[in-house]
Image (cartoon, rainbow, N blue to C red; front, side, top):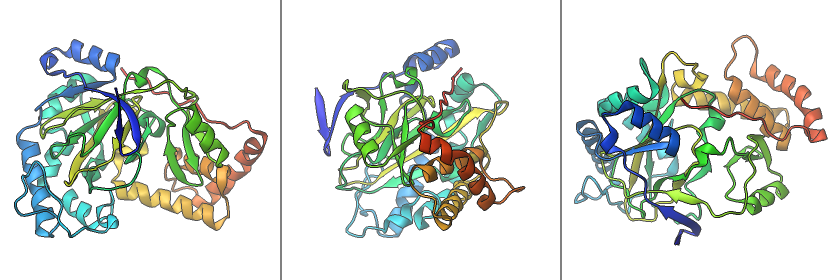
Amino acid sequence: MPKEINRLIMIMIALEEANQYLDDREKLINLLMDNGYLFIRNLLTESVTRLNRDIVNLLKKHGYVSDHSDLHKPVVTSKIPDRSMLSEHHGFITRKIAKLQSLKEISQGGEAKQVLGKIVGTPLYSWVENKDRVRVVQPSNKMGYATAPHQDAFHFRTKFVTMWVPLTDISENEGGLALRKLSHTEGLHKHWFRSGEYLGVADNNKSASTWLKSGATVTGGKVEEDDISKVWLHSNYKLGDCLIFTPQMVHAGLPNISGNWRISGDFRFQNKRNVMPWQARHRLGYTHSYLEEVENQLSDLNIQGKLGDHIAEKMRLEGPNRRQSISERVKNHAKGLSGQINSGILDGNERVVKYG
């Protein structure tokens, strides 16, 4: 039966648990390939308990969590921090979290290292940005998704997995992560931008048509959305659980409509021998500073709309380049892409990442 979650109509079923296969490497890999994910209950123990305690106590210290709250369900107080304090890479609270010693262990895999090594191979490499990947989400009345549906394969062209970790108990009311069933088998979906705003993957053809009419453009992917109802996977997550999924999996963040803080981490891992995207070697602040400078150059050069979105995507894929200024690169891309935009040739690039 479809459920309404803060104006989202979703068909939701439970994730399949993989605990019984932890000692069987071949079965784990096959299950990951078949389902696109591995959901493992209570895999993380001491590492996640320490991190949960440290983060909740930090929020309590600043008056954001009720003194009588359960560590697993931190209740918000009337003192609500400005959203900028919780931004991923430069917020006051998130900077303090990034410095926690208890985060270091789990950002490098924690008790999940053995499982991660089985599925991606060794030597295991934890992305540098993992230190900045804790999300602290307060309750909100905002309609729709907390994070738009998307595929990580759109953003990064390499073999890796993401390990999403609830750092508090997260029920349907707190929202958390949802995966679109079997979407990893469909190829790379069209990913939409509109004047610098990332819209992600459309829910259906009607949404895609609305975006197109509003001036949005596709900067990657070729799979069209249909109007068939999608099935989403979600469970009531407990502290210690982890959800490992492939880059091709369409996933989204659901809204937090509870009275509690939702805290989670999403950490990326790969085989060190595989090609690494430039972001894997840097902190999130460095990545965002580069992307912000690209946006500033586009604004200074008055490059907007579809052309600006395509140039920004090109620059993101290429990453920083010390041999040529951002301004020069933006101008060169503008020359090369403007004709294609005007002629309608450029409607997205296929960037499917095969896992295995």
